[in-house]
Length: 244
Image (cartoon, rainbow, N blue to C red; front, side, top):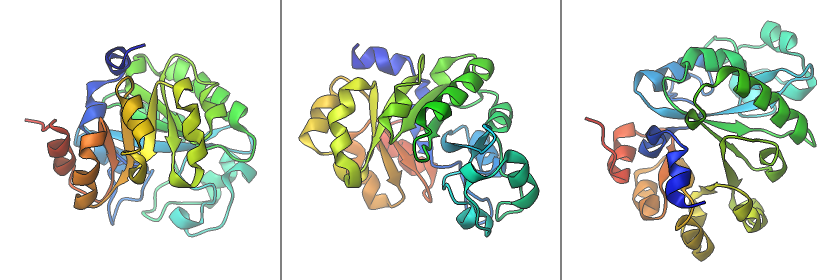
């Protein structure tokens, strides 16, 4: 499969930058519906993370521990959805959204990067639960780009473009790049010769860009960027995809 054919399987808006965990700020908590609404209002693709609760539901949150974004300890995978909804609130006061609530909010108005957050060995159950929801709720597969650090989770995703997440702390997984349609790399890895060769035939994204000097450094090596704490116009300018 050529790079051109892979790119055609993705919504073009992905290549104008991807808002990390929604378009959040000091008053809008990351991975909350208000932050995602802000991304939608700015016509931005956004990234988010899902975990599998104790009772098999899918919750949108980055960390497995709820402490950082709610102020209260709790491992998502050890709690039921009801326990989370009744006992936890994001720092801006809103409820933690379920996967279905987020998809309903967006209604495919903008494309989304979905990260599968594997806990211990639940990669198969997590991917299967995600696929069930995606099949029921997503009409255009171009609007979802699925990513994970765990290649086993991605191998259980079908019909969507997948990207293997690779960071410097687990760079060995880069050897598995050819199993997947794309890569999503920590910024320090984008100039690796293996990545440069891979990018000739596959799209490459980079995470997480939050300083202007990073934007300039990675732009020649990637097809798009996941960003936070920066004006989206800076990202679009670097990618050559300024919106009118």
